[in-house]
Length: 353
Image 1 (tube, one colour):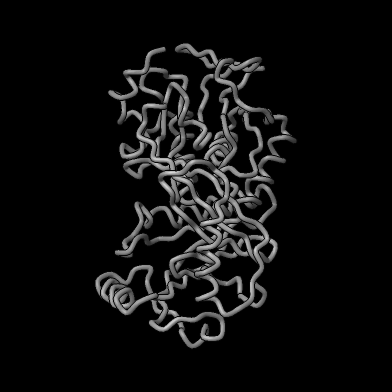
Image 2 (tube, rainbow, N blue to C red):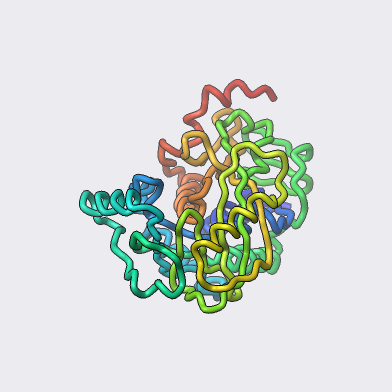
C-alpha cells in the first residue's frame, strides 16, 4: 500500500494531524489501537486562557483562542457534530488571600478576568470569599471528536486498528516502510507511548499521572466550569468530570482510592447538591520538562517526525501545531522554533541506530 504519511496514534494530536493532511489532499494511514484510557480520552477538554496561582496568560493564548475555535468548528462541520462551546470558569476563592490576589491581578491586567455573581451560586456551593470568572473559556467534546473521526477514518479505509510495533518499521532518506505500507514519512503522535521509542526517548519528557472521577450532579447547571482546588467540568451525557491530580511519582496507572477519597471530601465540604460517582479514570499526560511541545522531523532521520508533548494544554496546542506541522510537511513552511524538535538536535544526535 502506498501512502504519503503514516500517522501513529489517534489521540488529539494524531486526529488533527491526519485531518489537516487529508485537507491538503495527502494520502494518510493512521495506526492506532483503541485505548479507552488514553490521555486524550480521559481529559476534561477545557481551554483556559489563564493559568497558575499568579493567574497569568497561558503561552500564545491570544493567538490560539480564535484559531482553535475556528478549527474545531470546521472539524465539527465535516463530521456533523458540535465540538466546542464557551463555558467560563467560575473560580470560588478558598481564602481571603486568594481573593485579594485575584483582585490585584484583575487591576493589573483584566484580560480574561471578571467577577462572578456570588448571589447566584449560594444555593449550590459553600463559599465565603467571592468568585472570580475566567472568560472566555472553551470546552471541547473530545470523545465525540475522537470517536467520530475514527469512524471517518474507517469508512475511508485509512485506519489500521492495531498496536504499532516498531520492529516492523524501516526508514531511509526517501521513505518509511511499515509492514505493507510505504510512505514518504511516518509521524509519531502516540502520547506517552512515544516516550520509549528509541528515536525519541532522549527528549526531556516529564510524564505525570492524572486522575478524575465522573459523577452525576442533578441540579448543577452545565453552563460553567466550577473550580475550588478541584474542577467540576460538564462532560457528556449529563455527567461531570471532576479532578484532577498531577502525580510525578506513581507506582501504577490504576485509579487510586486515595484520590477518590480526597475528591469526595472536597466535594462534601464545597458542593451543596447530592452527587453520585459513576466512574473513576486515570491516565498519563505526555508533558515536557520545559512545557513546550515536540513538533517536527527528527534531525537525523528526515522521514520520521513527532507531534507530542502537549501536556495539559492539548486541546489548544494540538490543533495549532498539527496545522503547522502539516504545512511544514506539505509546503516546507517553518515550525515555530520554541516547539521544533530540532532544538534537541544535539541530544537526539547521540541516538545510535
